[in-house]
Amino acid sequence: MKRGKNEEVENDSMKELVSEKLRGASKSIAGFLNDRVNRLSESHKRMSLLLFGFILGLICLAQIIRSVNAEAKMTTLTIEGITLPKDIHESTRKQKLQDVLRIKHLLDSLKETAVYDSLMIARPGLIDSVNLLIQHYQ
Image 1: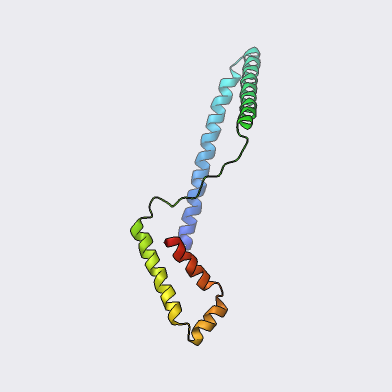
Image 2: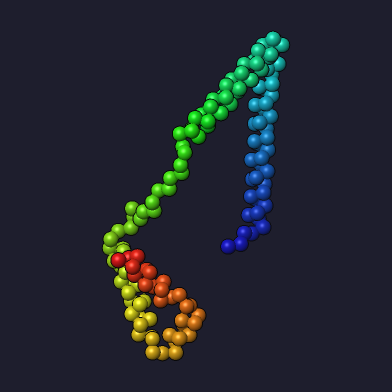
């Protein structure tokens, strides 16, 4: 479905309007925070910076320690087995098996024709795939 030029112009103008609103909001928030920080004395600014750096350093150190401890615990990689999804019901499996058996019967009925030969040339693994599907659904 193609959009009209008017719709594209409206979308572009809407994007510009939202962009301008976000830019204005971010400027007002930055101005508010800048005003609050400028009211602090130099000693308060230094203490805040040191406190922030100390807390950030503690967080980084905790992450490093956690990763080292987690690595020691996890020595092998385990892979869970593949299971069928919960939404596949037995009736669905039976229906799929019947469909595949019909395809197998159709292919068997074509064995004596030229169509079968050309089909086997075009798709050499078709019979094997059908047999594998039958085994899977049984």
